[in-house]
Amino acid sequence: MQIVIVGGVAAGVTAATRLRRLMEDAKIILIERGEKISFANCALPYYAGGLLKPEGLYAAQAGVVSARNAVDIRERHEVLSIDREAKKLSVKNLVTGEVYALDYDKLILATGADPRMLPIEGLKENAHPLWRTEDAIRLEEALSKNPELTAAIVGGGAVGLEAAENIVRRGGTVHLLEYGRTIMGRNDAALSDAFVHLAEGKNRRLVWHLGRSASKIERLDSGRLSVTLTDGSRIEVDYLLSAAGVQPRSKLAEAAGLELGPRGTILCDGMMRTSDPDIFAAGDVATSPDPETGAPRPMMLAGTAVKEGRKAADAIAGLAASKPLKGGFGTNAVSLFGTLWASTGKNEQTLMNEGKKRRRDFFTATLIGSNHVGWYPGSVPLLLKIVFDPEGRLLGAQAIGRDGADKRVDVLSTAMRFGANVRDLPDFDLCYSPQTGAPKDPVNTAGHLAENILNGLVRFIEPQEVANIFADLAPDLGDDVPNTPDRTYVLDVRTPPEVADDPIPVPFDAIPLEELRERLDEIPRDGRTIVVVCRAAVRAYTAARILDHKGFANVFVMTGGMRYWNLVRPNLKGE
Image (cartoon, rainbow, N blue to C red; front, side, top):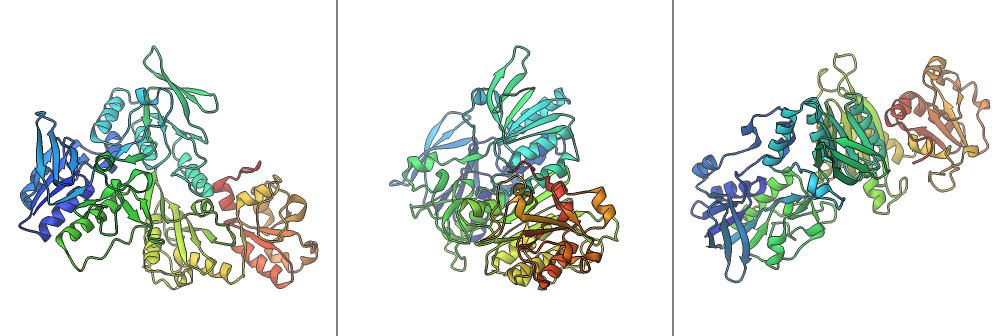
């Protein structure tokens, strides 16, 4: 059997090596149009930042892979077309210009994706992507020539953030342009703001432009670039980087008549078969099943590509024990100046985009804990948020912190894979030592919050919802719950020095928790919504339970207290 793999990065190389271990007698040919196989896309920003040597741009070498796995690797070769009826490929040697025919019995398309250029005047002519090794080399050379380089980056996803960090690391200044309200795609605004503010405190040479992007780029006589923003303002930069996402490289498959899926991906089943039973696809170009619905969708992550390459190899080899791919939750993380934002599954904004309503179709639990016990040196804050449905099914999780965020999200992603309910989280038996955790881990605490919500013991209100009330925006707090300034009462239960040092900037009354039981007559009983505030929501929860027991209606605890308020910095004029 002759198996041809088109594309020599994560999915393609994984498929090739797996096939060899399963099929010793097969002829395996790997075709890569680039200079070398296995370039490490994730390494590109860090090479530009001076953290890697050139060899660090590649995860493997063709000679080593070929010698160990008996794979015929053809670098600088490109497949021009697929003749499905004859099962032949037209291949061009990009060095010599020779075009030749190549037979296949089975074909794997792992052609990846191309960087997307937005339709902005002057962008294509003046911007560079950061997608292949030559892009990283170009940026590194620019930084070496001008360590004080000023750059603009179009796009606030992982590539844009990592590139920004490494340009700043080299001594440059970055203007990050993101047309959306949040970074990292359509995400929870509060978490996006928290991450930005944590990173903002680390380095002031990263200038954020959220909610606006470039509308026109012009090259000046000096050689610099003038970037006009969507709000009419202008900035001048030395270098322009486009990091506005990618698009599947599926034209080869489309020309061959293969059925396509969402966003131009190649439609595949759970074993990575395409609409042609002899052709498979894997990696960024292929669809991946939604683990909840089974629907095909793009999932452009390196971990997904590796799993798909392995699954395609299993299917070709006829490995009976191999089960269809379940699909991933999109578990990923991005780091900026030492602060990590990890996530898995769906977030609040995704659910609202699907038409679901907070406090009806889903609930959230948010806490600010620590990466390990506070008395051991090195304890730092850890923000954790989970999303779950009315039955307690865990839908997603996000964590932000300098240490331990990925650990908690990995636990919660695994819990989701095995169908854990949020009521299971308090019972999770997690590793504890003073250096790494706590007897009650933030994952356990998130479960306690979720249990209390589902049991009707507490209702939370987000800081931005509080701000929206006093901006006359009437946030939806539930059926028949008052949501206007005149029908809302804010109660701060911190001590007088705490209140004086950090007052919430909306109308409020202050009664310390220790005095609350004796001063209940000072709190209105006219059905107003009562928002209870403290430093971290712990005392506020105790106060809310007192008020509930004493017959007060519509009592809410402000999520995360003033620690969270100061971290997310709500817009007092509304969303």
